[in-house]
Image 1 (cartoon, each protein chain N blue to C red):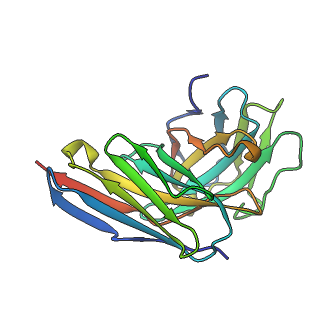
Image 2 (cartoon, each protein chain N blue to C red):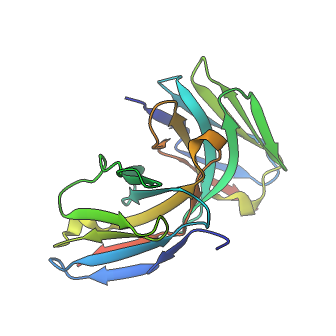
Length: 112
Length: 115
């Protein structure tokens, strides 16, 4: 059974810092990995999708990497802003099957 | 539509009543998923629809939960005889078929409170 773990569970940083969120998964037979953002009381917003054959994806200040063989992904946020404050979730989609398995999330607070 | 639409956004119901939650996926998305997020918990898979195939119901927590998808588009999640432990945010997502490798698009969710 796939298990997805996110570390740290919570993170508080001053504005302007670069930061790294970590996601690890136990079964490397994944089809893709997706990073989401969730604001309080809201649904999930997709940030980046990495296919299993890819090593990284970039969007603006966000960069996500994938090391499938070691079961790890990182989300790098450059020059953090208070508006980045949210919960960040990673989810993996298996090669066989259709459901995403989610990590528990990292709750990020960027202080002005 | 431009995104996944869920209604109602909030629902408060008395214990023992039935509720229906609606999801309108992105036009053209053949796959539709329901997830549940309880307070302080991660996302829990409930059910998956793909085209005209039989749905994957493996995540439904009890026989009080059921879902249908009419015409390959709108889906309704029904919870019968609601219990307080059913209180959660119910999220719907849709995607293209997996061959395209596209990710999921989520709706804003329905926050269900059973009192």
